[in-house]
Figure 1: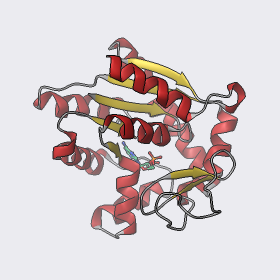
Figure 2 (figure 1 turned 45 degrees about the vertical axis):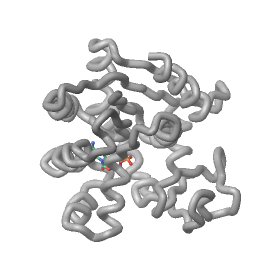
Figure 3 (figure 1 turned 60 degrees about the horizontal axis):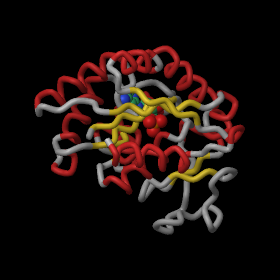
Figure 4 (figure 1 turned 90 degrees about the vertical axis):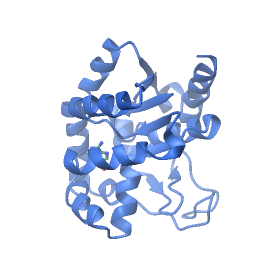
Length: 220
Ligand code: AMP
């Protein structure tokens, strides 16, 4: 089963994807994580991608699409995957359809997460990530057991560069609205969209949504 996580930055896509991945064994493929690993390792791809990511802009398709194509050709993704951060434009969605169609596969489910805008900005500012195992925490909503340390691997947590830059946060939300949000209608028309709200105001957080989605997938 191929699942796409849709939603603005800070909605909890990565957290929900991680929880679903644990329960289903489909790998979580996060384009943002792959880019950040490459930036950390100072690879050619990372150096190029960083020019866009640090400003909150999208990395060009010439870099992103081959990277995703490659990752989807790995053995662990042959029966399914959870795409977290791709596609982000209609063009990328069309590319994904082409990549999957080559193996007789298709997008089976799109989980569209929504959260009130003021919560999103706050969540980005208070997000902390583990540079080693990629776990995500939030100093307000989901703090690690020991301050500043990853619960899973003991590494020191960091703040993403694009989360500490107010202009980059604003730019990412603008790009989401302009380029990514049309995907909601696109996948609704295909009959694969499932929309879920994650918000402290209704006491519904990532693990509540993940639990229901896992049930749904298992019964599908
Ligand atoms: P994320 O971790 O999903 O918030 O992604 C972090 C950054 O990586 C984004 O703000 C973009 O600069 C870049 N990025 C991630 N996925 C894509 C994509 N599908 N297309 C272009 N750029 C991307």
